[in-house]
Length: 87
Figure (cartoon, rainbow, N blue to C red):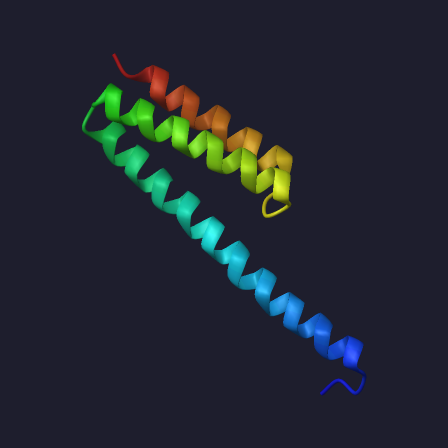
């Protein structure tokens, strides 16, 4: 157990950030699943809507430091390729 107040505060902040980050990541994963379901059904309109939402969430998560910028960029690129592979 920490002895100083600052150490207790650091633990509190760490737990708070962990909960926040997990929420953001789970939301991103849910959107990815919905996007991939739409791709599986070959529904380009719904997949496009989910892609736009997912792109926004990935950019915000990268901006806030929840995920790295390159990870967000790589994910967007791969999802974009899947979206445009539909005909």
